[in-house]
Amino acid sequence: MSDIRPHEISVPIQEPDDARLFFIGRIHTPWKDRKDCPRQGKVDGPECRIEIFEPWVPALKGIEEYDRIELLYWLDKARRDLIVQNPAHSDNIFGTFALRSPVRPNPIGTVLAKLVSVDGPNLIVRGLDCLDGTPLIDLKPDRCAFTPKAPPKD
Image (cartoon, rainbow, N blue to C red; front, side):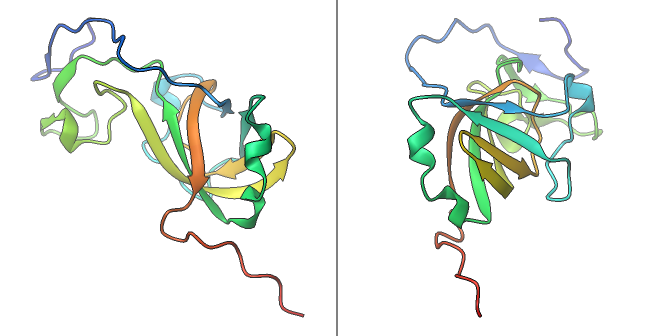
């Protein structure tokens, strides 16, 4: 890869072969190109669809009880070799671990999304910041509010 910004440093890396992930689904967003993707998702952003694959669909049981879910996804289009980066929105340079950039040795993205609805194997959410087709690693209820929504009051 040759799209290095000024002051960025890359290192040679070998293809990883020490971990195996199961992609449990795919994320569908309006963004096809990284330059169009928001830097961070916003809860008033567009609705996006998360498609859960079999055999993982039954694992969704009860997820509709939560307002927010945390998603972990694999940034499959991200480069993995930069150790120092020069973010486009800044005049400063930073080490990769001091950034939320998708460019990292193990490109795992996380986001806390608003759960809008559940329809079988599909979750509709707001607040994403990833490209269309991004593989989903895992999802779980918001770790800061690990209690289901209260039942409606009559």
